[in-house]
Length: 185
Length: 124
Image (cartoon, rainbow over all chains, first blue to last red):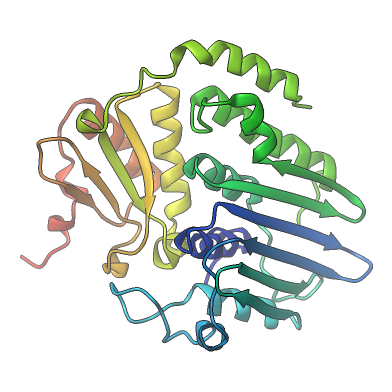
């Protein structure tokens, strides 16, 4: 098992990267009244057939050849469902995939959200050819980071250049602190 | 709060520096396994440690990359260092502290840190 939800996000986004997506959406939404923490990961990658979607929740299914088990999706699904939440995958070959995990926010078994700033910073700076649309919302307050907007300004300056990388990390952290007011989620 | 104006200013400063990155033939690659097994074992802070050190020291000849699972899940987090003209070195069961040591000893001074390589884990 992962120790925090942000690691599940980091892991499941690797599937989108492997699926050759060039646009990946990550949305984190906390709603204290509905008592939910909802994570949506969407991509425009190669997608899966209905048959494959059924198989990916099986820990003994993987497209890898290096090992026989595939635990990324099962971990995420189990983590959400063990809180009384839900987990769904919608996918269409050639169009992309949407993975939605809803956690019951106040459930004792819900893992902490963890370092989403670290996860998004790593994904953005480590995959310069891919665009990310990240949104983070807590009880009505929210912020969005769209790397297409950054790319338009930066031109051919890559995201992993030191100053740009620092800017992105601080941008994520400052906006996160504004949105959740430093609350431990 | 960070503004887009600041990003524009960074672009102005950086513009002249692009293109000084080394060609891939002279590039040293630090590759960190970031599949489920790696992430669950703590690969994220290891990758962050390497990226931060390389970026802070502005080492244009070293690239820090992510890869999937290479089938040695029990040894994760795994870091492979590939230097041009040399054999690949595989470090296993890495931590951010070990990453710092490998960065200073191997990447800066050119000395492989034998106690963390995969051969140190193999039965004698």
